[in-house]
Length: 277
Ligand SMILES: [Zn+2]
Image (cartoon, rainbow, N blue to C red):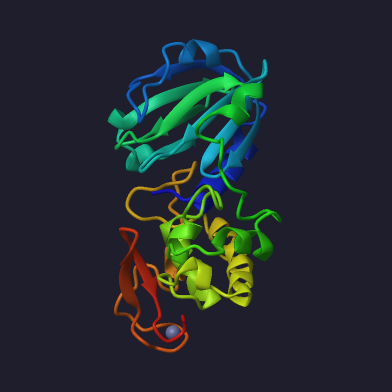
């Protein structure tokens, strides 16, 4: 499943290649995503200029001329690719090309999604903040708002495991399973610890580790498991840098103790029993 680093690295590439282009026409091959794409989606997009591509949590927020915004989410298996001459579509089954935006320079932006859990909608820009998808999201993990005092205010008295709390989008937006495990390894905190019992010094380590790990992952185009590809069809390279995620039974890179896997909130959670307390 694409997490924040995958979405952010995708955003950066699309921002360079697609902003300033005009959508000549939009074609919907399959409207049945997580929610059905509205019937007027294609007609609304035609003729609009792409003015900006931003990100909120794991959503891409595409500003279009005429004060419209396209909101899109990759769900479990979605990808946006910007295809021109020489694009190798070999990794993408054309049966899953659900949305195709033809741009004025002859290139196409293609949304491919085998499992169809993605989301696609267009709204007036001023209505964006009120959308149920974005309303109630916590601060961005790469922002100053996500600091130890903020996190302390959210963990105080909480019995939930710290890893679950970090994955709660209302607390901090966009930290998923892979990176929550990695952040807690760098912070030396076990994923199962009760959030309310995590000390302020440990919260400071969590807050410091978060942007470090996410930025390193963004620099590597994220982590590719199964089918994830970025907008040029490239896999991410962060998997080889993961310290604990997916490494059950393998030696910790710091102390050689075998990495353990424990289920927290129904998600696999990897940690080093010696390095993490
Ligand atoms: Zn260790």
